[in-house]
Length: 278
Image (cartoon, rainbow, N blue to C red):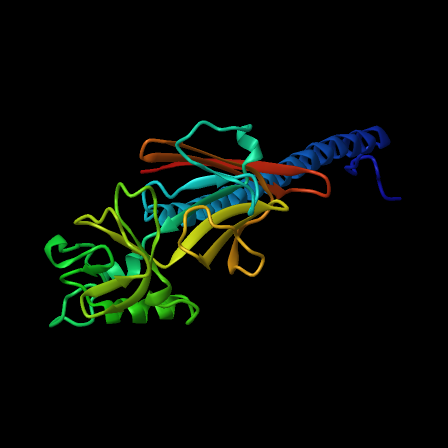
């Protein structure tokens, strides 16, 4: 007969003990894996919300940098009364959902037609000796180039004859252009306070929060506080906006923007960014 006395093996108690230990390890490991995955989901949502908010802020700042001084206003809605950004708020800050301004035409101001013709679209200089209340002489300008650029940027909706010029210290008055040729701009009305410097604008801009979406409106009349009609073109900058606050002090505008990102069926995580525009 074979001798089974020296055969190695596990007793039932040892097997049960091993199973219990493995069960404990498995439960701990599963909990760790679940926690790691949960942290990954939260961090990914936080990163996405942060990136989206930052990109939206960058687009806002890039436009606001070229706002014509004293044309920036705040509103409670697209067609409500407007208030200059520097004045005291008549309502709570969270009641304002619109930040609106007239933007100078930086594209044609910076452009040249060729190396041998380095005149910009408009020079921003007014020769007072050769100008009067209606006719503005602007040496160094290539107004035909400005017209081409404005038409291209607006998809032929606007041209230079639908644009306006602004003089400093002129009560934010928008002087509509009747015609422009060579280095001469003719206005539709009389500019009583012409100055050596001016800015040309062909559109207003507005940042508007509607239904938790931040939208940029553009290609509408370059007039301070003009109403924003339903047919005005716009683009979506950011979804799920929870906070959009702004405040003006002197030549500085501070903006706070917050947005949420979904991490589960009923849970969200929020990211906030702030920036100052000078």
